[in-house]
Image (cartoon, rainbow, N blue to C red; front, side, top):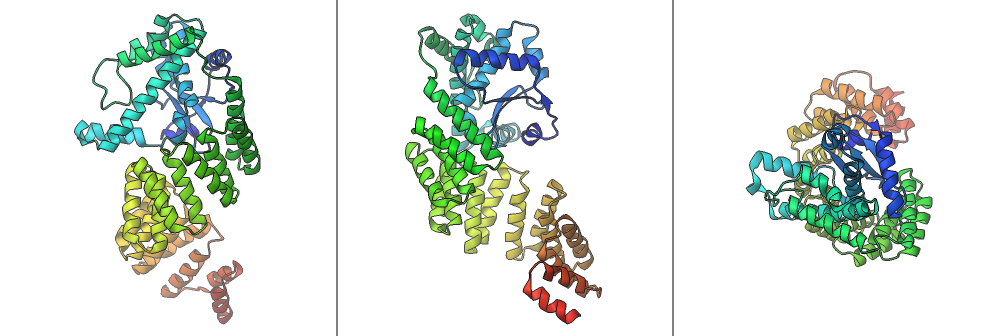
Length: 446
């Protein structure tokens, strides 16, 4: 499912034996543990290092592209590509990526030209190029340890890269990348240590924590993160993810403490502010949460989850225009998140902009035809617009998808009144779900 999540209309394939063997070769000379999952995903343009929302590290590769690029050349070509992607994971580049950032910016360049990019978007591309340089250095380091010559370590870049202006690109030009590989190669040649045993042990515990967290085993995750922190207390990532686990385990004070430490270690990470905002929301500290959302957005202007969190606070304050503004920005960067449409639709509904609300709920249903909330809210809109037959149909769908849906029963009962149909059964079902108002009406029905 991960291939389909990141690349629509894609199919997953298990990794092939050759890719796994090459991964083992790289790990054998770097001293790091196998905390990556290889996955063939032919929707990926080439090869991509990705960390899921649950923190599991993937290296997805397009076998067709890989075979065409390698074209029966020696294994060093394949190894250098894989080492580069591992370099992204080792350097922590994939911990904070958003699903659509790169694609949205590149699509904007195609549609509107390079000059359409904002300063923040240009800064984002610059950061991406810096990440590529770091990954290239790591690749050079690995290739020396695998016994490759410098020329062999640089061969793939000579094949796929050019010396064109890279200002509007996610990747540096050829000469910059060749120099980065050379730097990593020379560091290895001069016996520069890339990773020590202690750091490796900390990382092993950290990624055990991520695996536990992905299975909702928060206590075990916290224990693993704590072991990592005990070994290397200076990594903000360890505190950030332990904070998330504490938050998920409803231990908000300890979560806040970890987010505070993470921010103290590295005050430039938007994700830490956003998660601290989420925890402050749970503690009803809305002003503090709003401040953290503002900081997260300032650090990363295309961080959709921070816009969503800020919209939650403004919804509580009744600032529906601001809710709509933030969610519109979030949708601009992540147009496939149905939750954003539901929340924006609700804000439009509060402002009695029923047509716009209806469009958002319809979009939600198109994105997820089994979303009971989409049908519930659109059914309510139809009810407000006196389109009772359409309302009844949507509310029935909503109940079929979630039979514990109190509001759907209540609204459908009112719709049935308007249609002069029996409504007592809906009030009775609503009463059985614990709604006192429904119970009173149900008694009168009898």
